[in-house]
Image 1 (cartoon, rainbow, N blue to C red):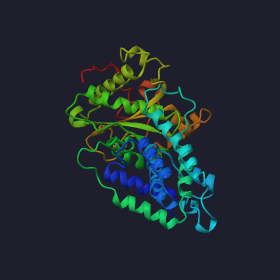
Image 2 (cartoon, rainbow, N blue to C red; image 1 turned 30 degrees about the horizontal axis):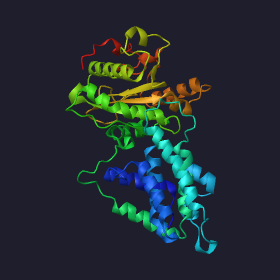
Image 3 (cartoon, one colour; image 1 turned 180 degrees about the vertical axis):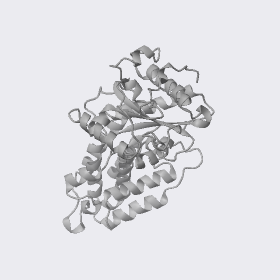
Image 4 (cartoon, rainbow, N blue to C red; image 1 turned 45 degrees about the vertical axis):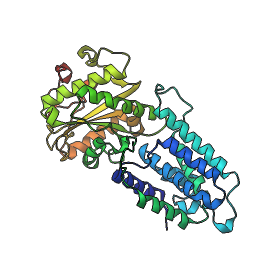
Length: 389
């Protein structure tokens, strides 16, 4: 049986979507417990259950943090098939120091997770090792503790089959990669003419709670936005998506402008030090202004029901929601370098035009977030709307 790492990632992603979780305890604690079990095992056979769970942890963390494991694993080992990483019985025993090497690799993962979960300001830990750089090695080492690919396959298959939704008082950590907003924006990702959208990896906050105020919902989302920005230090995330229900906020272009003003105002007041008093029209309309959150320059793509089918911000059939996607400049520059930004962004606009969804690039950043209903119309002056949400 082939154990292609991308297919395994897909299988465990489906498991998490179906069950809502993969571990009842924080991932770092769960990984540490499995490594201890590997060390405590009296023989090689007894190690295999915790070793298989180490592989599961690595796959699920890769899914949560947007790590594509196939390229680095293939580069390091020559194969993306975990069956090729086991130590066949006729090749002798795994190295005696295998538990030590697994522990060392796992400790790096745990330190990185601790930083991502911390309150340390982004950009202050240059020693952080991104999960995309260490998880492939952790998988390789765990697989080396098996002498049979069939045995490894059986244990991973059993893990998938045994997964169930948590019951009772089990507290499960929210997974931002499985957020409701991420699911909602998927049709836009799949059908937009942006060439980078389909492979973009997104996070989102907990679902919008209609029993709470707008400000309370935004406050609940902020820890996840901060973690998102912190993860950008070491790993590859492309956007953070908010979803706001139209039965609460309306769906006209005026409703959209009011909501977006309150949205940006809240972010500026809580995630910047430069403007604790909130959004000021004179500041954001300066041609040199950019939205900077937690030290990270961000763009916001706004999708709403008011945009018709021939608009670049069309929702592609998604009903009842307005979607705001924060895109860090780091993610944009991974696709469009400074040198080719102008020519390639022009080519993307041409793709939209050829798809009968033209848009014009406004001169000021502030006018590129909420687009007018028709290309060529005057900019939407959302920053002048009242903050009465």
